[in-house]
Image (cartoon, rainbow, N blue to C red; front, side, top):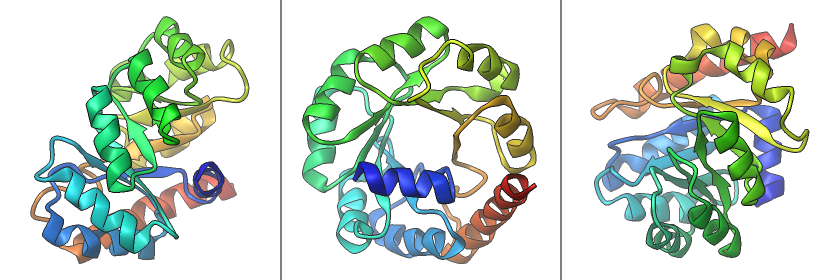
Length: 211
């Protein structure tokens, strides 16, 4: 699974956050994301029946995509996501117990951090994908400072208020990937709307990476 995640980060380093998605629509939306070029999909646990949605995605798309959960706060959450077939555990905070339990279950933790202290705590607990959250609050300059002291084998994600119009700035600052939610999906969006939104983000990042 780590290899699959690394491949997607090299190809299109975007985690699509489907907050509020329902099980009856999730597969069509997941396929729209894949068609647009995004293959890392997060269903936050404060969505309706999230574990069912994760299971649907994992069973239908797990061979092609990385599927997981967001807003993961407890060990019990990790166990549930693992049972549903998830690959990644995305959290808004740094919780060493959640990180360690994720690794024990064979999942990849992506804990949230804001300060250098939290970033190092997450790293020391075993996390190698670290999510600056909410990124817009801290700005891309925050990444430049923290990147200078973090080990080279960790990847940094910008999540929260970062969209297609800011990808250039953040990539130049040293970010490795993005978590994008409402710019890709809001409850009520059709699969075609999701495809168009995702395709615009893919085009923006591809243009920056190619320049």
